[in-house]
Image 1 (cartoon, rainbow, N blue to C red):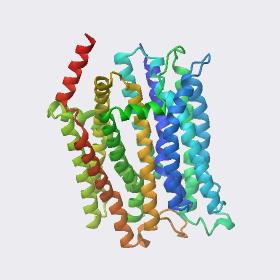
Image 2: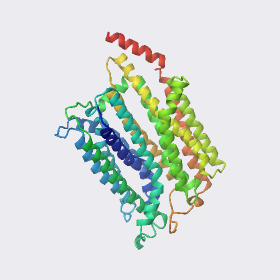
Image 3: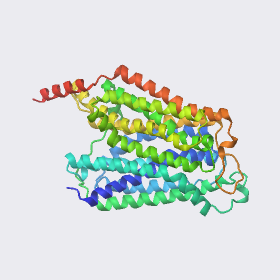
Image 4: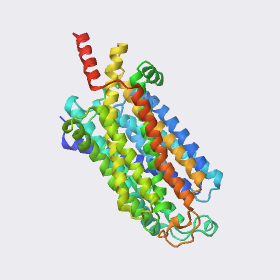
Length: 482
């Protein structure tokens, strides 16, 4: 049985890797577009192409890891190689040479972001795939997976809460004077944030390497363990032959696109709409409450709806989507009515993030049910293939949403302008037109609502795996086995 040391070290690895992932996913657009001034449209194309490429790269990396044989096993070598290279690329990505011209910055963003995705996959695939290599299965394996998912949530929450608090502080400590030749491009708060991100990323990268090293030294891998991998052709063939899996996968894409559009733009909402000299404190509070709510929704809200209120999973899904829609409507109404205090905005934030937490659980349940359905229909269990689609479609949704957010920023002309201030404590919303603010609100709320409703239509029209249907399928499969 696993000891506390192994469990803690594996959880620590999840904290480190999701700190890195959240930093890249949440702030790469803001860093290059708002601080360095790269075209929002160019960033949208870069993020979309890189994410789609990264999604297709996952199965390839799975095959490479599966074929690896060393005296240290097949997983830990790639964990270390991937972590070290990803940490270096992460730092370089957030340490862009400020003297580069517009074209140079676009090229730099494209190369570093694509390399970051490739190197992150190098360590992420073996991290999750190695669980069978040092667990005995059953409750031990399920418990470790749950622990790792929870620790990953902690890593993400830490970055969401701390980034825009620590970045300005580090920037003020280490920025120094702006070089004369760059003074017109990066005055005031831009120069502070530029340097703040560089040193903050350095700290995150060091912790990432340290946590992974502790993990690799603490766990004992069974090098003989087999790793099943799914090829791209198998993934799509499994979907084509399983209409319920196709329905669930499309639903995952749609609901994640809606959520990620908002998460990409919420920092701009706090900076350029709500504004205020302490906008980053409000943003950090919003993220802290939202991140905590998402974790609690997975641990408490879903079991409450399922076990206490006795709702079936389909009803829970509709309740969850309704919560999100109500949250978006409330957010739009508050912003339109001129609410300036961050505290009321925590209410729609809680609704949207609670919905996201419940959806994380419910979609996994639906996906598991499609495996049994596929076995009954096609006489073949595609469990590993179908579940490998989760990472693929989440990354695809991330790329699509980043592209939409980037186009919106380009149309609305939202980016930091030369302020000439000596520090970051200025109100950026003062120079933003009412039309741009309203446009940002609409893209953050109305577009996700439309996307969610489209997802509901897809789901309602095609999904047939009710609780009763699942019981029938389970009974039929048991009869076949007998």
